[in-house]
Image (spheres, rainbow, N blue to C red):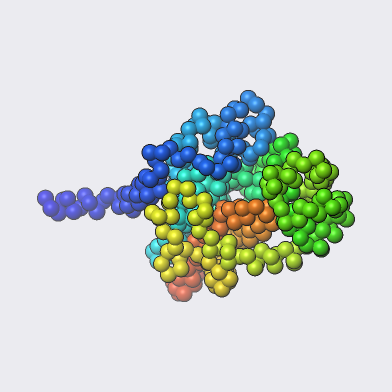
Length: 461
């Protein structure tokens, strides 16, 4: 009898059972304290998301309004019930982490590498600086969740490409892009060119894959155009542009000269706003009649000049981002922790497994990631995944740069999605890299790796 019970117990799916228990504990720890109060949001942005959602999908202002689509759409589907929105955001965050873990287990074979990757992925999910956003009616939660799911889907597709998997990549990338406008810039600048390059290289040896990638590019371009039309129609980026003018451009003689060369007014009324955001002094920059010419310039040319300055003044601006990087990496976002999630979930993980928090640790993590990517390339079987994860790492750096410079108000809040994706990228890179290193050090695995490398080159994917 006892032997029979033991046999049955061994047959149970213990990893899934333990994962379900851990997920339930995470939800209780995250949501328990605020559940009875319904998670009322004290942030002004939250009201604007609900306002857009209230207009409903029959209104053009719902699709092209003051806010990007995804959070208003979720709010409308849940009838504006904030408690349900918070619950669904939290469930989606758990589901995205599960998906990332499932993908990692499928693509990593070594138990040691699997354990490392799972710890790092779960570590991203349970850190209070990321989990607290699930309790707020702001776009950060969906941005983090969609980013985790997107990276996992890209790795899943890179491991064994197929037309169906590329379709899921397109869906995940579109969902992530439409959460925040800054995500669209990464898709246009990095993802689309990368897909076009792969489609061109695969055009003869894998025509179906190349065709599906071209279709994906078309879908992403439509999504980007949709976001651009929304930005233009609602002028929702006028606030960041005017913030940057007041707090970064006017305080820098070099940037002031650059902007003024493109027509930005620099009379006394404009210079008086030096050091001020558009919300200071009773929204003076946004409402004062004597500043209407500045607002008109910001609306007509200011946003494009702002983008151009990020390219032209890259050496100076990237130095600013680098100087502030420790503050960005170490920020626990307790100022946004309205429901004290940080009191119930960990701030950090043991042994520094929560990722880099300063310049030296960022360089160490990046160096180890580079070694792991090189090992993945050498094994041959992980070459596509190495390319995808290398591009994902570069995309995170680009997002940190663009988001830090895209606005001068609540700067670190705008970085939270990129910081979470950095942790996910490191988790996949280190797990797959350690797995590759183990293969390279195993004499029995070397011939198989070489054969797989030759086969991969022949497939051209």
